[in-house]
Image (cartoon, rainbow, N blue to C red):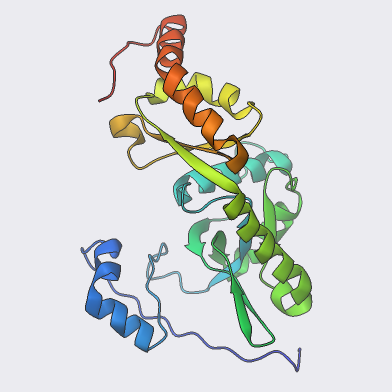
Length: 249
């Protein structure tokens, strides 16, 4: 055991409620209580029988503010499946993706960032680590939390890298692109120089909204590009693929 490692204990209280998490967090009195007692509140994605849950680490170069946890979960599962050459019937151990704020105390000063973290059952941790280790860093960069104690400089560097990544990107919201059309356009869009990712949005089904992430240097040019060409692109793909043109308001 690391004698220099500070012991830290966390106590979790689970509650069931029909009130949306956002409403609870935005309540003035709740905010005051959480801050006063140094507590946080978040969605718990495991059932009551699953108690041996651990947090393995976080991912860099993905924006948790403009990519849903569900979408990233699906992408990561597919990436691990492909990287480990798993057959279709071979199941990856159950895991969950959630928003978190990885942090490290360096000489009395906290350094934090915003990222997606991966949780799993204790019994599945070793297997998931093996699967994640074979993923190409160009596809997903995983940073184990254990580096916080074994090699804190590397952990700190990963936190700073993620923060710099978030500072370097901009998100362009586009609307009126049905999912059937984006199915054919997404690959072409993400190949454009300066475009990082095209993510789903909570209003994708309802209004055909997507979050297109670009480097900040390309933000103005791509905003003009979408303003001038998006409608024509949607019409062209719809006509070519035989997709009914029912515009989304």
